[in-house]
Image (cartoon, rainbow, N blue to C red; front, side):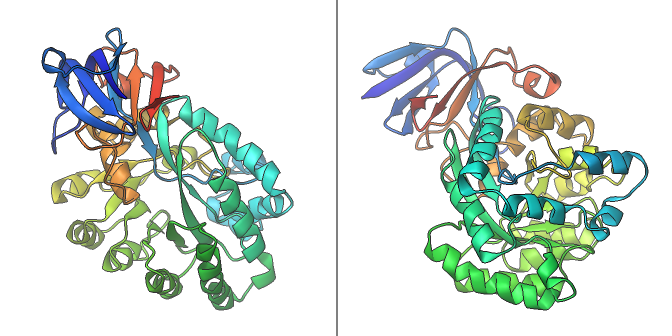
Length: 393
């Protein structure tokens, strides 16, 4: 059965630049796909017509970097940072990721699912239709598998899972990081065989893993045909962007300390620069990612919440659009493309992120007059309705 959504203003993002705005537009949907987009006056007849009552329609938002599955919180660390402790100092003192690992290992799969579902519901309430969920708070085969299985069971948006076993060295491997990387690589085929892994990530940083250790993880992923991405250049320049680019990574994420050489490597490989303003804000960072250089080099820039308990406990993708503009000086159009077009690319998904013929019918109806308002407002949620795979949500 075909369905026509009409009496709407469409933000198609169909071209490489510009909103692709159609003032009096319509979208035709059959099954899970868009079969027609254009002016309402030229729309084909359909079995059912939906009056959108002047709503603004954009592609569904895509949150392409989250850590939704975990237990506990790190509110105490927030206080410590306000008292002057650095992220690195807290991590070296046994806090940080390890404290979340302890709480997560103690939780059952159903408990982890319940906690993560509440978080995903909050993202969906602001227009998210696709979400990436990383593991990385289990750091053992059993616990990583439990986290990934919980992610696969989430409802309300399409979930893409990423294996982040190389997130931190757990206590049982203290002082034996190379041995832990061996274990991370050994676990990967078993988790993939269960259908739990869509991509592989690592934390290449002065408090994380070295470039050499990261290469071992990426080689293991490559041997299994899995795409890679990387937490890179958040706290220091480890030349992680160049490393990831050499593997054709889907994205490099954070990038506050990205060098000019790293920018050029991303541009040459087509790797997406994933900008995470929530973590920048929450950690009170002062070094900005090199936005102007990324823009000049034509590197696609994505935006995500980076929801996690330690450095970005936000569940508001709309706030991230605002922060991308106010903190990073992106334009409202760049910010929205960052959570639609380029976010889809950062997940290796070519069937969404734009309102074009043949795309998956994931879109949002908003009570705003112009798309720039989605980044302009904060503390306001103008979402009226979501459509996912052509069905109401």
